[in-house]
Structures are given as C-alpha cells and as structure tokens.
Image (cartoon, rainbow, N blue to C red; front, side):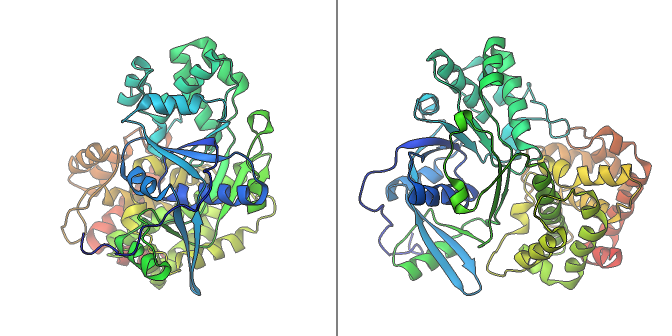
Length: 482
C-alpha cells in the first residue's frame, strides 16, 4: 500500500444524512458521476427526502470505499482549464446484495422509497438482446423464481420487492432505467412483467396497472477511476478519496415525465429535460455516440490505441466517424425536439478529443454481444431496408468480430469481457476463412436478427471488411474505407 496516497481520508460533513427516497441498483462510476450528482444538486436547491440507498448486486468494492467516508465522495469534472471538484453527499448507505438480500428487499419495500433506479449495464436485464424479451432460462432468473427471499438479479429484486409492497398494501415504486438501451423504460417494464407473470398473474396485473417505467436518455463520458486519479485528487484537494469519479464536463439527461403519483426529485433544476417521449433522444445518443464509441473501441483497440482520445487524434479515425455520421448514421436518426444533429455530432467529436478523459478502448469494448444490437445493428437494419450503404457500419461490426476472436494483430491474447465470450471465441475458432468466421458469428441469434444473417449484401460487406482486417490490419483497413 506504499503507493497509496497518504492524505487523510475524505469524511462526510457534519449533520444528519438524508432520508432515503431512492434505492439505486448498480452504484458504479457512471451512477456516481451522473444520477447521484443530479440528485445531490436537486436536493441542495429544492430539498426533499431523496437520499439514495445504493445496492451493489455483486461486489463489496464500492461499499468498502464509500462507507468509511460516510458515503461521501468527489465528482471530478476534467476540463482543459483544470479540474472542477464537488463533494457529493446524497448517498445514505451502501448495501451488498449477496451478503444480505433480505436487507435489500426490505429497503425496496420501505414506504419511504418511491423510486428504484438502475445502472446495471445491458447484461443486467437478463434479456435476449436480439428480441428484448426476458431470458427465462437465464441461471439467475431461474434461481430468483425459486428463491424469492434471496434474489441475485436486478429483475428478481424488483419483482419480489414489489410483491412485498403489494402484500403490505403500499403503492408500487417507479422503476427508472438509466442504462444505454433503446426504449429502456419499455424494456425494463417488459422483463419485469415477464418475471412477474412467472411468479403470479395477479402480481403482474398489479405491477402493470400501478408501476411506472419512464424511458431515459443519459449521457456523460465516465472513464474508470485509476490509482493515478486518486493520487492526483489527494495532491489537489488534500484528502484521499477512494470512491472519487472522473468525468467530462458535459452531461445530458432526458427523462419521460411518467412517475408513480408524479413523485420525483426536482432534477430539472440541475438541467434534466422532462419530455413526453424520449425515443428520438435515445436513438440520437445510441446511434451517434454509442455507435461510434463502439466502432472506435474495436477498431482503435486493434490498431493499438489505448483510449478514445488517442484514436480520434488519428486523422484516419476522425474521418471514419465523420463519414459514419454523415452517410450511414444520421439518415436513420429522427430529429429530436430542439436538437441540431449536425452540431450534436460536432460536439461529440470535440468530447472524444478531450485528452483528459482517458476512456479506454478496452473498457468500451466490454459486453459487445449485449451492446451491438442497439448501437450498430439497428442502424444497419434501417439502412438496408431503405437501400442505403452500410460499408462503414459493416467495418465496425467486422471489427467486433475480429476483436472477439481473442487474439490481436500482434498475436497477443485479448482479454474479452463478455457474457458470451467463450461461445464467441468457439464460433470464431470454428472457421478457417473469413467467410466461415463471419458466418459462424452471424448465426448467433443472441446477437443477430436472422434477417441480417440472410442479407447477402451485408454478409458480403462483413466478409470483405473482416478479410482486410486480417490481411492489412485495422488502421490500413480504416484508411482504405475512408
């Protein structure tokens, strides 16, 4: 531990902790850089009992970092002019679900809790990404159906907690997904009701009638915190904060205004946009930002770049995303109210180029099998239906296919983090030619809609791109494509 900062530990300011009105599942870096910051600001401006009881569904790591600090931590906005520090004190406690699932259920069933929010990543929804339906045979779902007193999945916790509220004659809570999924509110509602129907049809009807599942669009680039970040903050602020989180200055939160009893924090005072329909904003963000982020992650990693900023600093990759936006993404994006799509993409490029945001290509590349359908494949399908070109989108998907083979251009192993990693590697290894590898991966219905498998023009574009990635490498392939 000699390399750890020696400054005193951050501690909470004096005074009572806020009363919890929110339970949040998944208190990772993005939640601490986004949801908690908005809520902290809203309570400072307007008050209200909207403290957050955070729940880690797997690891003790965040609890062990936050609780010794009174659950206070530092939000660090990285700007070219310098870092902007803000201590956030809205988290009231942190629970670790595997240690005491009953305590988590009790927290969610508490009458003071009016909102349960989620940042559990795509795989946390235990759904089939290509259909959006609950994967009833998922091991965690099977466990949770049989063990209502000790769930493992977010979906199991939600439904069993709602059942407790129903038994206690309490109203249901609002379930607020803040993950990068298309129509995330409707998806959450679908998997929750799918689970509830497997438990009890009367419970499912009660949830369907009374609960609310607003859609959201969330946006703030948040790289993983490193030991260097912790030391830099200690040097700058004079205290050690193991739970600090770095992020870009930009943020955007668009929320469907649909809450149980119209009860929610005053997030609008912090800049949140409340609208009747989030769909156009979601599509804009998922395709323009997340689509190009994934493209840069796979192709940039293969080209030897560690971060998004380094990748986009290469003019070849900058040209790639500019052409992707102009020719293959924006034609599929509806115009959100009050947004200028061209200006939005120009701002994205500037955000990507911020050298202080060390967002690793490897980090963004995680869980690609869960991300591809909404970030890239929906855009592909829309273009194919309209008879438009998908050459660059196919290159992005081929980059993912090359990445999940598990071996980089130097013959070194890639640490592929994906719930389907073994199956993907097996499929890739089963082919000896680009055609066979592409066909084997395209046949995975967990990722690809069968219509894409049967589209000969898309398949040919994938084969051509994959073949070039093998023969010429990622950078040369991108240069040739643009």
